[in-house]
Image 1 (cartoon, rainbow, N blue to C red):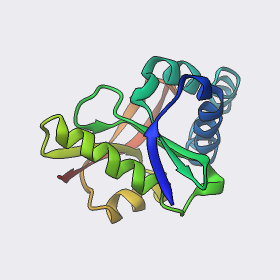
Image 2 (cartoon, rainbow, N blue to C red):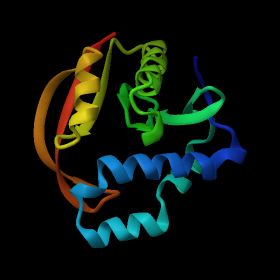
Image 3 (spheres, rainbow, N blue to C red):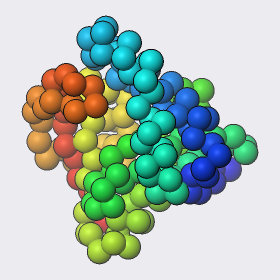
Image 4 (cartoon, one colour):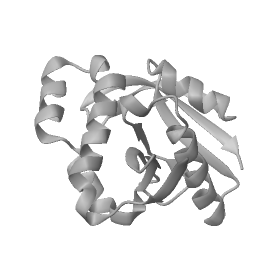
Length: 158
């Protein structure tokens, strides 16, 4: 059974490890080595989790933290979905997206948006399976990664 709940202050390090592990698998191969090393050393998930606090949703499977998700700007855009590689394919990502879509709808939006690195085929397939449709594709500067990435913007009516 998957449980979705707000993040707790005392689990920042555990959740940051989940984010970093998911990042290593899906995004690290897409960035230059020096940027990957900097991300590894500074783990940007730690300050993000501290800043967002209970605005981060946690997916638990069997009582274990399996993934995190957020709408960083409390708008219609899902900014983050990160699932620990050992929990991939078990529904944590889908459950997080559904919970975030509920929050988006409750804020008065009729559509949810998400961006994905074009080369992150596993995530792109998940979003499309959940009903997200591509709106645009372009190369953009990722501010955290300080590198240009081909991204796809998608949306789904709620």
